[in-house]
Image (cartoon, rainbow over all chains, first blue to last red; front, side, top):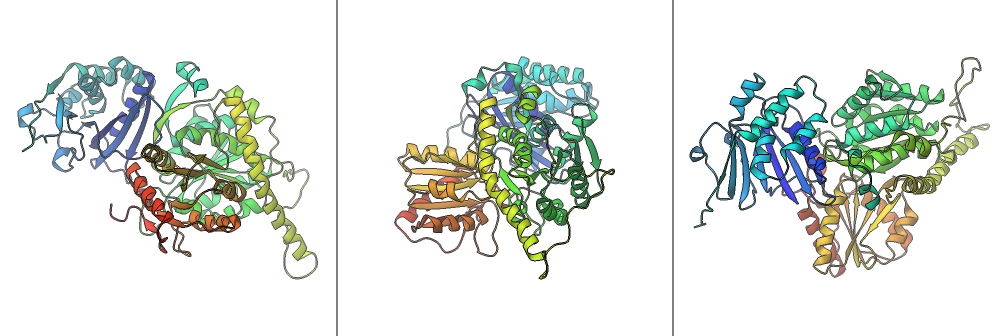
Length: 190
Length: 408
């Protein structure tokens, strides 16, 4: 079982992204369960969504406390939420950020980092900082857990209202193409 | 499982429990739905409204000014012979209570999803079984689901159970707020023609169908202490009780029929999981059961003889099936997602004590209460429940409930 925790802010589409990622995983023939965690929806408030992926049926309908991967679609949320809580040793971080790797404060548990300047790209595509689809492309590139084609199919099957399908397909592709993947030397615990 | 996997790939969809319920309602072809949105049920009625707006569901929809009116609208529609549906939760269910009580007495086979939510106050908008448990004594059939697929399948079955002539009672399909309402999973969507064949010819309200050309009264004044009042009232109440007992059989029959046609079988009243040689058991309800099963698999691998009795049908309470399932159990831990204030324990635990009396043998037991107001009941929590229940085999039973999330 592969477990993902997705961090974002209300209005950025973190919950929607978790649903599209689940659809992409199912497109590839696997099982997926996505569980969002929210209550009073407020634009800008921290939002978390959980996603499990497995070859067999997933029975537990619970939150995720020890993820294999953290996807963070907002560049500043790391200042207010401990996005690394419970991350498994050698875990993966997929981060929306314009900063170089050296400027990120990463705990020892992080083994792989995918960095995507998603806000800048989103402003070019959507004229708004909507980073969710971009970060799905970044996740596919960083983790290899789901293919770009499966995510494209999931987008094609989705029901877009105000945001265009064509823009989202471009966002997915650019998120994939413009993500830098870094494999970190594991720091030895003192 | 293999039958499901053999189906073509495009039959899988990913959707949340609320959408699964709405899709099931569309497949069951109701004549009228009436709605009022309330968290965490809102997206369910939004999906229903969208299905109607998109022409995928041919039903009248009344967006009423509140839940009391929602159910009253459906009373009229059901009395006119329509197949009817709504959904609510928490404070919405409370506001609906007056017509809710009348629905079962008038024997109206209305199907209503309860997207379960904890009771206020303290203020909370999150899941818990407190709302559905609070109205468990009002004569509705109440069935709880474990997974998104089960929500879809059971919502279809609900219409057939409610409308069965030996039942003629309203049915609540309970899906856990947040974890099931917003939890999205891979599911299989049945074909419309298969559902049509399963449902058969619509024969909804043969006992009282309002018709302006043939004026009639329903729900006459009965009771009191004189004349035919007492006997008439008793006849109505006995009829409701008989309908509830008949529902135990009908629920099982409809589940069997569903399994034969669609290849997915769910234990209709209660599921016995790893119970063959179990020394002690947990009882669960709703979406918590998946995590409980994962924990029991791990405990079994470690040599612990533990099983699960998962209730699906809570009302009518499946006493005989539960007594049979408990036949060889030496200790029992019952996990509730709501509070029974009167007995200082969970409501399912309190009901189970009645079944244990029928068993005629003392079984050490404990009431666990968890998952209130959206709290999680994880696999780790269930490992502690297993340990504490196993301890009942050799030690004293607690006199107070054990609060699972007390230190979270």
